[in-house]
Length: 251
Length: 94
Image 1 (cartoon, rainbow over the protein chains, first blue to last red):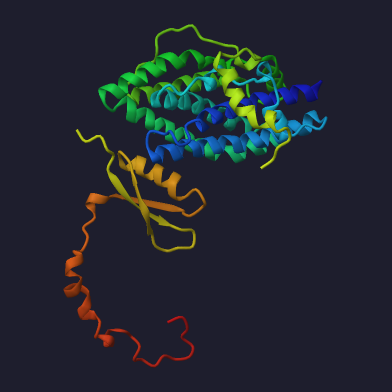
Image 2 (cartoon, each protein chain N blue to C red):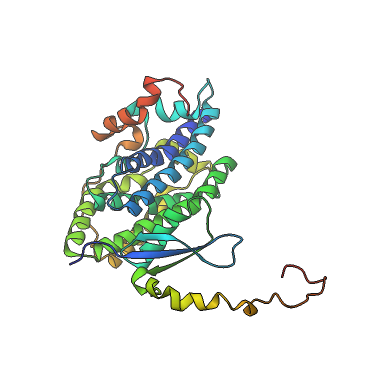
């Protein structure tokens, strides 16, 4: 029972960077500038590196011949536990940056807490990942300011992206049963405690970016319990293609 | 309005290197972005521990047509090389 909960928790930790990494990977060769293209795919690779650590561990926990690849790529859509935010499409560069920013701030807070997890393996992964994520925060925050405080058009586009994506932000802080259990066991943080710090940090960057906090919105939830948006199937079709077409294929 | 980002020259100091060396150039809208881009483009394989960036327009280059008058006169001034001194054996790496 406890093993199943730990496995589920590792999916909750690993599925966000998996799906966001896949979204960023779609931009490979399509970034707005060569340098930005490299930066975004670097971030994608950072995320997949972290995912491997979580899923190698998850495969050991669940046993039955599972591997990091089978955990990552052979589940059905409703078995993925990523938040809805990270599956939102790359509509334009403003959406890419805004989605990244909203996730990065959360990700950094999460990893800072996980470093003191009672589960040593999770704590070690968090220690290893946090420097990468500190850079992601720098990257997306400076781009928020650059676009928000840039031209009239860049400000307007970022405002639109923020207005759309903000509804998916609060799901990150709404604990599932697994996350509540892990918080009680000292393995993971109490997510609701991270929310006020998140709001403050987002607000500070928005102000510096000449943006306003979106007005009250109807927050969307569901990804963490396996109910995804219509985009998810398409993401998985591409993501899983190789493992489905050529089972157990390796590089 | 010029919509192209300016070009920046990138200088990287490697772990064991004492000086920053020219690594190449890239596009960026401002200095902060140039540092980030340089980090992402030129230090992905642990090439560096420090980065300098300077916008290319701030570099003044010598005129290639003047290379004769600038550099050739040094050719026959061998006495400027410290090779005419007898060094004690204890002194190494000179």
